[in-house]
Length: 94
Figure 1 (cartoon, rainbow, N blue to C red):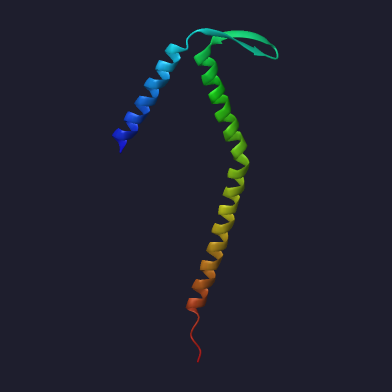
Figure 2: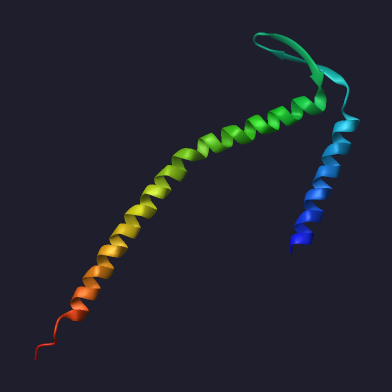
């Protein structure tokens, strides 16, 4: 399984390097504060990283909510298990 992951990562790196070499021409990046000339591959990688970062930030709220829910459910499960253990220790009355 490790060799398959390694081959897949190597393939992606080679494709990315070939893409960067084929798109090395500088382009103008117009933004609100000015204009910057940079290679197209660099601009695309920066846009990809910015999008990934924004995706992580957007999912943080859901992650925090789910972690809180998990801790709540673990506490409830622990209390239920303690109650079951207490009920099992009670003698049976006829």
